[in-house]
Length: 419
Ligand code: DSN
Image (cartoon, rainbow, N blue to C red; front, side, top):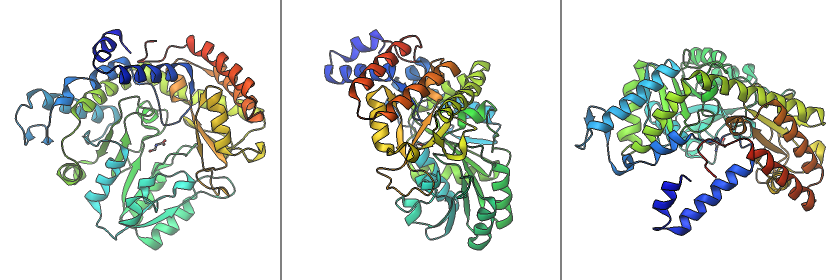
């Protein structure tokens, strides 16, 4: 933590101050491969931890229900303008508290309870809020789900088209949380157009790649685009909805007053800073390096006999099937964490195991790339991962690797962290 912040917080609450410092140390000393995480910059953290948290601002710039919005209006308008410019969108709503509320607002804008919606099944790589049965979106709406092909684990557009023609969904979602390949947004858009569905592209995982041109943008073909702001986009935890002008009114009404109260103004400011950073040439290089690093990591794991879902990656994310390694995802993830490599266990398509102890692990390169690590470090990470997964009970090996990882991490400063 910045010394000035520590000196402010510690006298008031030493327990929380020291826990934040401990978390900072943990984030600094580990290879963080959780595909949905990153390191926000010191500038993003500064804007997020500001007096803007003190204020309520129900409404939108120029049309609020509280006085005192002279400054907040400028911040929100600037944030929305930057989002529109970065993604080339007609309209940006920057108030959603995160990705799930952003998606819920889309439902509220366009469908009524009981109507049919369609999205990718969670075990195939989708998201809970795309209609999975344990989510409100799978119980309040009639959700139909598409998956991936059994032979290559890629989206089967014949299946998507057939299902859409048969079920006539009002909303069609593309995107998810464990899709290692380029998403063909144009193909989804065409199917949505044919069946009269609103096409929603959820780019939470790949927003930073889309902003930098490292993944095709859905903005020209989608009715609505939702995203979080803290994954590859490297902002604070938050959400955004981009849409065509024709949908602006419905989306804005759904976010407020439909779903949320006052926007989190401190988060809006942090998002604005992240969007400014994402518009730089440096961020463009960063986003392309995320993909280069993911490919290098994939190649190095495959060389060691690892089985990757779809055989590799086009983006920031890899999904490994550990079945050939005779170890479950959960056991592997725990051993890797002990050895200083943090990731999450994950189901793989058609997983015969249960979600709480599945066959796979998911890993991603946004965080390590933020530290300046490149292909050489990815090859070293693959070697460490293979050693740990081959010896999940060898505590001495794990401790030795954790030490080597601390030494490597000391050479690659993490944005936003002063240790
Ligand atoms: N929790 C996020 C992820 O890890 O992908 C999705 O919401």
